[in-house]
Length: 216
Image (cartoon, rainbow, N blue to C red; front, side, top):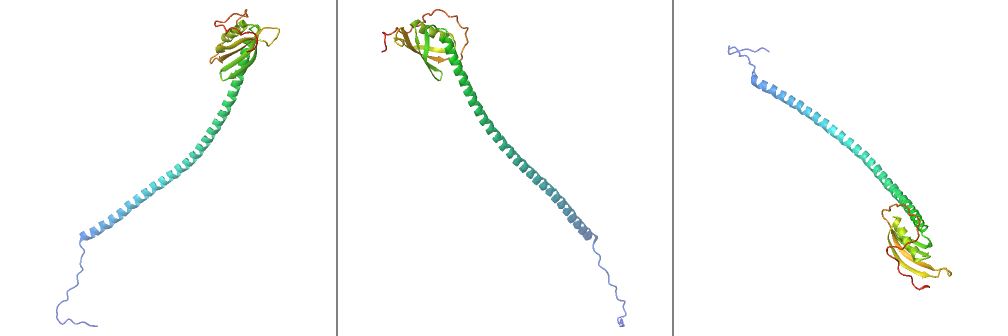
């Protein structure tokens, strides 16, 4: 198709519009800022995620240690219960052994005291705690007094008191005196050198005068 210019003028050429340099730079800077912000946020995300993972790992480790310590605590409590039970049994055994030893020592000491006194023998010996009740027969009152003296000298007894001493007829052909007395086992027995056997002597506090012959 042929175009004819009837005006006889040259047709102006179309000009291109140019974009200002400042607008292009702003766009580039905006894109760069968005990219940098994205990188920063991603880096912070990775850092926070790592911290969270480390915290979760620490929590899991602490929970495992807590469970292990709970088991150890249960084992310790069980061992403590067994220890207390064994200690109770040991205490009972030691108590029985101590009581048996004390009873043996008591009988031995009383026997050692009796053999140092002439014309005296025991008929009863009762113990309630540290209190003793002693009963016996003697050929004379001096033997009873001497027995009290020997008990005191042994260091194994204290608070020795005569309760009764009277003539009886246990042996028809011989005059005898029945007696009862009380004593306490000393809390800290002292061992004294045995005294040589001597003739019976009266105690510092003589026992009551004997009653008339025959039982009352």
